Amino acid sequence: MIQETEYEKRRTLVANSMKKHSVAIVHSATHKTRSNDTEYPFRQDSNFYYLTGFKEDNACLMIVKNKKMFKTILFVEKKDAIKELWTGKRLGRVDAKQVFNVDKVYEIDLFEDIFAKNKELKQHLYFDFKLNYLRFKALKRISKGISTHINIAKNIEKMRLIKSDAEVKLIKKALLITKKAHHKAMRLEKLGKNEYELQASIENIFKKNGAYSDAYTSIVAGGNSANTLHYISNDKTLVDGDLILIDAGCEYDYYASDITRTIPVSGKFSKAQKELYEMVLDVQVKIIKMIKQGVMRTDLHKKSEELLCKGMIELGILKGNVKKLLKKKAHKKYYPHGIGHWMGLDVHDEAPYLNKKGNEIPLEEGMVLTIEPGIYCDENDKDIPKKYRGIGIRIEDDILVTKGGYENLSIDIVKEIADIENT
Ligand code: GLY
Ligand code: MN
Ligand code: MN
Image (cartoon, rainbow, N blue to C red; front, side, top):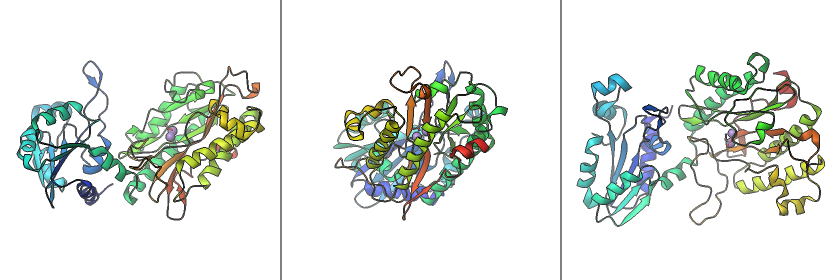
């Protein structure tokens, strides 16, 4: 759990990043319609949650900064017995003031009045443009005299790049649950014959262990389906002799995990599957070992391209010389994605990859990223040996950059062939 003092510290850091005489506004997420009058499960906006820990919709954080001081105001929905009868209890203004160490809490209906009152301070308006464009337009209307409009999301997302101990603890907890789900999937014979049954088993374990949601739609891809990178239909029957690529991770208390394992339906890898799998695993292990402070993520990616290209030549998938093939981008047909991404409150964490000058941000203690090389051999690809057609493999772990190098946070989720076969 993240303590209120940590949220308070984050709000202070955002305030410190703001210009004098400015106001920042960060909105909660809004409900999204699924069909007619049903909605998708509500998920709080990550930036708003990062600054408040507040889980309700129809809320807003305002930071008002004058020359030296700043104050924080939380706007929450009014308590309403009839509404609460249908959709559940709300904290309300009075209780919210008890829980959150902000200077003021008001009901959301007062938002525009309060905003207008602070007019003399608002030379600069910080706003999350992406989240609520209509609100932004309304604010612009009532805030004539504001000289600049600045995207507040950038300030918050930069902070999100470095995880605190409490955040790492939550990611580790998410991974503990995700481990159970993947290990159970490796004992497939008891779980059913279809991709969706396997998906249900994985997500059952998430929920059973207190992770109420997946961090992204699970990918359970048998055989050739693994060659569709974001395959989420998960509606096919599993075929003995095929591999299954499972890219699934739970979200625990708002923090993601993101794990891919590729396992055999029958419990045993074939010779051809082993050859491809060992090659990808070897690359993944080598890239993880390169991780330390100061290293660039794009250098990890380039190295993974080089190693995979080399491996593909050895297996007869590509023909020619590594340098020339890389130059021609021939490997991209079989390895079309990046080596990994930031992870945290979002599975693809909204944190910057480049600094203000447009230069890449090197790895630093406290960052969390995935390492996920893969190889994808389509069943209809006549350019590759027949034995590899229809096989797709990805192996993905979640890595914390530490002072002395790295910590593989998902090291306990087995990935060696012998371990998968024996789990
Ligand atoms: N699960 C999506 C990804 O690996 O990026
Ligand atoms: Mn990933
Ligand atoms: Mn993934």
